Length: 221
Image (tube, rainbow, N blue to C red; front, side):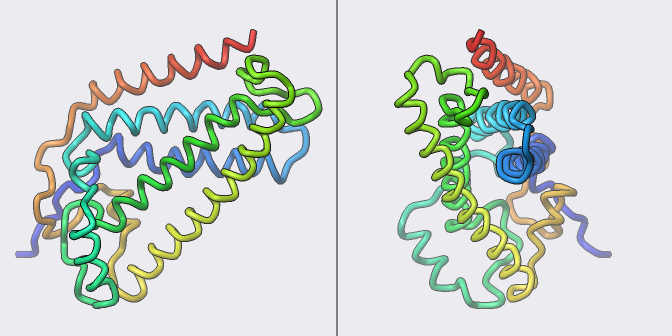
């Protein structure tokens, strides 16, 4: 009888992941490719920021594989994994991020937060300003706009490396990293959670994050 897949990623983590993909893609399209779409850009930025704040909280209170203390490892673990990186059979059915992947998550979250936070103070040099731009004055707002654009360029590099890693694991190590983030399941997974964290807790935490972002957005008035 084939082994049944075990729960690897809980529903809130999966919704966060794909919501972040949608939010960042919308921000990029409305900020770089479309004219007269800055209001949509702002809304997408607020949505993205609310997701990022939620992920920080879920990294503390979420299911085991979603917690930072589960996938952040020290230099020894990183070095040990790096020595096996190009071994085709080095992946195994482990629960969650490997030592290198864990820190790549931190880099992606940090870069995304930097883009979102600097966006609150930025302007488009025409008639759209972030809700906190008035708090810092025109000169600082212009400077933070430059940082907003630069941090997005850095984030784009990290996203490119992330996509390359997915392809590397799929084509070279024959490991599909995408399907578990859709279904939440991974067959023969060691230490996967039998019981995910509370969906009610996830809903409450996201409502709090959404409230914080809404208050920030309203502060422009």
